[in-house]
Length: 88
Image (cartoon, rainbow, N blue to C red; front, side, top):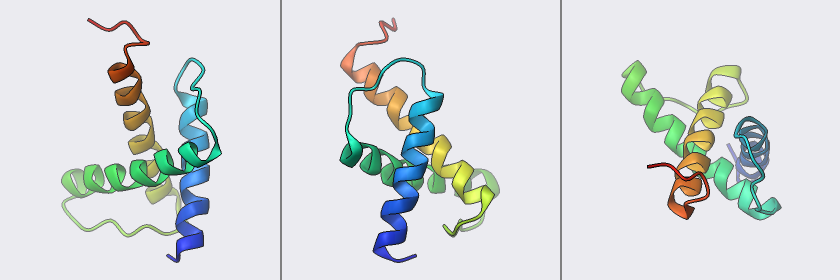
């Protein structure tokens, strides 16, 4: 994928992840893109560990769901680091 595709993919994946994670994330559009892109990388690693094969990111449902899952994991980790969730 090209750079613009990664940005758009990250924006969509990050936005969906923000809808899934409860609570209000006080991040803007650029941070949402960053969460989506980094989440896609995390999802790719998770996919490679589970599937045992290289995950290629393209505009398909499987890679998109992995990107959203990675973005959700990243958002939950960021909120846990901030202490907003009050986890013990």
